[in-house]
Amino acid sequence: MSRLAEFRQLEQKLAAQLAELEAMKGSSELQKEIEFETKLRDLLSKYGYNLRDIINILDPQSNRRSAAPAVAEKAPRRARQVKQYENPHNGEVIETKGGNHRLLKEWKAKYGANEVEGWVTR
Image 1 (cartoon, rainbow, N blue to C red):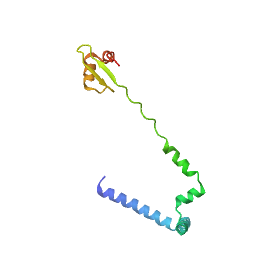
Image 2 (cartoon, one colour):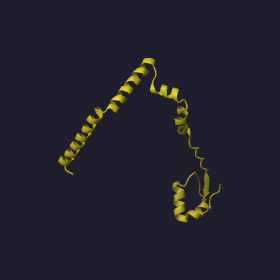
Image 3 (spheres, rainbow, N blue to C red):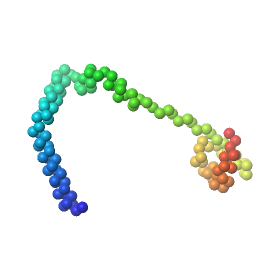
Image 4 (cartoon, helix red, strand yellow):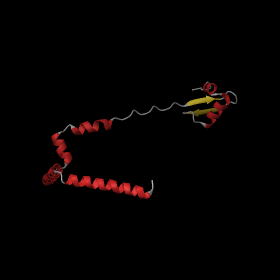
């Protein structure tokens, strides 16, 4: 799409949104809501309250309901066990907690994973 076509499309969208905004400004429902919000905020400031205080007064349980799911934690992962491998061909011994050890990978590539897993001494 060319920049000019894109510009004209955005201009049309903006004009439509401005027309919608003007229609809403004339709405009596919107005027009522704006008036209510203004009076409510004035009343709250007059007595030193905020919206959270009002919610807690009207529904004291709302605090507990919204906080409960956030508190749930995952169980910690179980620590990996140290494995000791002894190569019967040359007597080398390595200790690792995972399969990402460089020498262990070399052994598995050379001798096969099944055979190397048989070398576990503990």
